[in-house]
Amino acid sequence: MSDQNENLFRTALDELGAVLARVDEGRIDAACNMLADAGRIVVYGCGREALQVKGFAMRLYHLGLPVSVVGDMTTPPLGPGDVFLASSGPGETSTVLTLMRVAREAGATNLLLTAQSGGSAARLADTTLLIPAQTMANDQGPQRTSVLPMGSLFEGALFLLFEVMVLKLKALTGASPEAMRARHTNME
Image 1 (cartoon, rainbow, N blue to C red):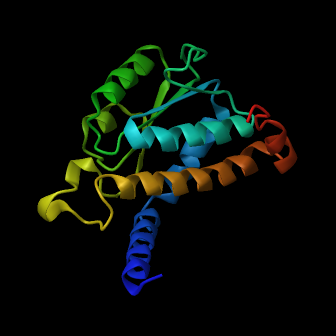
Image 2 (cartoon, rainbow, N blue to C red):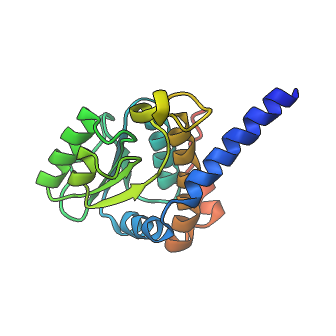
């Protein structure tokens, strides 16, 4: 690996570490408790954030939690005692805003992951997990803070945050590695 590539990797990893170091551990624990206690969990994200959110939904399913992804034909209606988990790095994604309003009107709790604590989505959230990372909202000009393009820093931080949340949820739910593995699909 060339020195230039090694420096890019080191820079990107340092940026991810700095972002995750600033995420509030107490809010992570509160979010995990909320998910562990939910009647139903429905998740949503746009674009590349959707890929991270869907990966998290898969692990929630492996943990034995009642999870669905918006857009799947088997997604149930939400109501009181349920959680709608949405990711909107920029905090102004129109689809997320609409779905958060629907969830709120149905009596569900809105759990938001965002980089913009002052965004419209944060105002609709019952609980916000702030991930202080560059997104598409601030990836150009003097606002740019990352070597990674567009919202990649936020998306990478989502992946790592979700993996840590899976570990915390595993402890909360008492899910064994064997039980998790038994829920993995055999249709591959």
